[in-house]
Image (cartoon, rainbow, N blue to C red):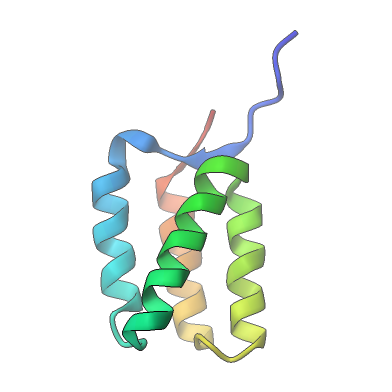
Length: 84
């Protein structure tokens, strides 16, 4: 029996994803940027896109990132995630 497919990060385009993610998060302080990048990539790759979006929502509520940054990250995830 197969496990159900979930929307996860497209591993074939990881370098491009990391580059775009760095551009979006560049205005943030360096110590926050590294943590955010690592958490978003790990959640989108290992769990699914929804887990990564929940993490982004949490950081928006904690006022670590702005609403505008949140929307950019959502678009980025939707563009780079595929069913696998």
